[in-house]
Length: 516
Image: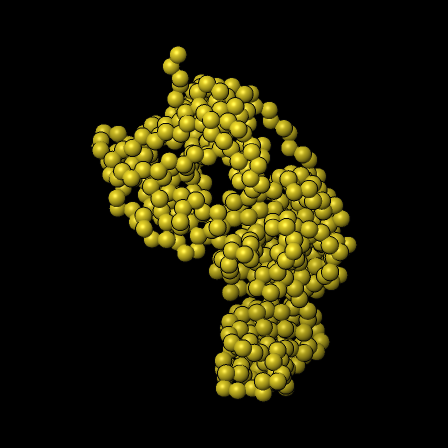
């Protein structure tokens, strides 16, 4: 793990010269236990690089029964790791008391030492790209960030994915455009100033946004606002771990959005994107404590204080009938009236074109499901008038080689199977004006088949199909054929909400034209 903030650089070259030893050992968490054969233990020593005593390597020697080490360096920075040795670079001279908490299965022990630093070198941190973008550099008084209110400023996605594919907030979400009726006006006034030497994030805030799970009596998935309960400033660091960049706020610091993860505030953010004006981060969290301990990603976007985020221009699509068809014979193109549009993949699906299993002269789309919400989809340039033509058809090939029996024990509560891969197709119609909440009003029809290793033509008839809001249960449309909002088509095979993998083949999708 590489630390770009001098918090824990690997020590290269000769070290030494000065070795310090642990000065104290304190039992914490369970002072009445009196210690025992499973109590964490170890001796804290350190070495300082000759001629550069700001570079210090701390080591817990003879560590026993330790699951994790929390190093507190005495300069308002800390690091938790499973490694017993770590290198830290101080940015200030002086005397520092260093504490290391050794955590075991049932209790913890804290050991301490003192280190004196007489020289510093800040050239590397001042020239680092991430620190320059985040703070403005060593010559700057700092850069001020705030929570974004643009589309997608708050999002949710799977732990094994790279995007917020499950849900994204609409424009002005925090000011009331959220479907839940809450407003976070005071929290949107919060400002976070990052500066260097020392590395400090200053906080100017009167209120904070709380994840709904902070209050066990809060309505599920409805976040709420309270008075800000944090500190006025926090130390911070940027680190690289296994090819990913992280922004860590020391001492349980957080930016605008407060959520507990494993009993502590979410303070370590993976940096998804960082530019002069945007800081886009994510962290693993439990979306609903009632569903168990499985974690997924929460995404938050911050922007520079002076960035103007205007409401997106509303696009009004005509309500009309247009023919729709896609052969999937070597192409993802869809013929929509006089237009040619394209089906795209969502999430972890893998698609390719292969020989038709029953006709080597043509190609079909191979569709391999891997994640919870895989699908292929096309967004239309019109709203579908389904009053007359309201039946879709698709040919599907369900191979017998798929495993249709094994159940994914980690499946989501909103799964549409028992957690196993199903030989079924789910056709969904979306209203894109709903943004990240389009799933709530989707018009979905599921069709299953017991046939294997042959082409099956499945039919989706929306005439008389009642549409219920998946969130509230209220009726959206008594008859989907009378709808006037749907402008996206989604084809999903194998079920959603589980990760059981399977491969299917599809061809000849069409909106059937009624014969007069």
